[in-house]
Image (cartoon, rainbow, N blue to C red; front, side, top):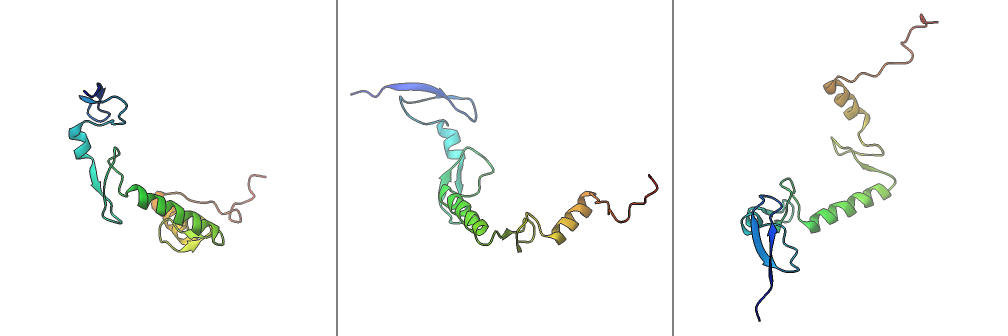
Length: 117
């Protein structure tokens, strides 16, 4: 019995390639091999369409679960910059450093003069 084939267009390079009807393939053979990556955490080889993906599906799922567990535990999470366990996105010292680095200044309410009145 002969397999029924269809022609699809590669999502990455735009080349046309032949695949079986009902196949979920979205990349041609060249791009499929090009987007083979190695997981930075476990070392497994995986395919991805996105060039910036660094973790395989299992490790990404594990990371998401561990972040959810951290949030549930007393409402604490790691600081975005230093990793210290806090309740906010960044700890106060990291916010201060970020503001200084990016030129964002907070006006002190007590230092504002009452000359406007």
